[in-house]
Image 1 (spheres, rainbow, N blue to C red):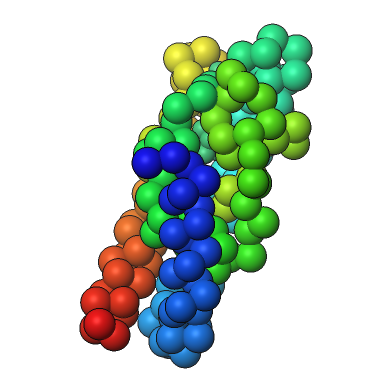
Image 2: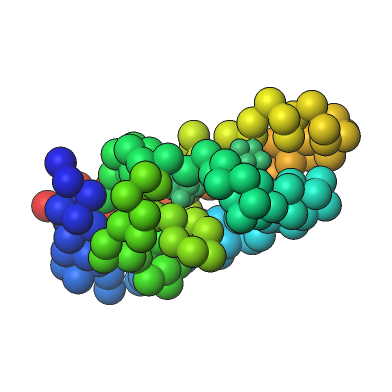
Length: 162
Ligand code: SF4
Ligand code: SF4
């Protein structure tokens, strides 16, 4: 299915079930914990110097690993989580060679697929202190678990509602 169709499905879920989701204390709690975990991963990336290295790689070497086609891994549920986190999803691809969700300032998403959360190229893995990589992996693990739990809860609420 085309990314724009999946995006419309996520918007429809938000429109139909938004109030139901936001009146569920478990969903609200998971959203808050996910926000903190995403922030934790971001801080760990910065501490490890990865954010600076990736930004340099993208600007100077055109070496972004956010290639066209990665957006196909995104379901309406993952995009729905982004909408619930207040993300303004793009309505068109910025660069024909890149992922639909990449714009000039980087990834537009807050909640990302596990392949995006985990990916580090060999160059980064070789250059970065393994202790800092381990710290980052722990944070990413928390982020992935919370995201999984949240998506499952959202699906469950929709199923229960009928
Ligand atoms: S992970 Fe590696 S290839 Fe991807 S942007 Fe960072 S430095 Fe570049
Ligand atoms: S990190 Fe964001 S821009 Fe990069 S491939 Fe994943 S979704 Fe696309």
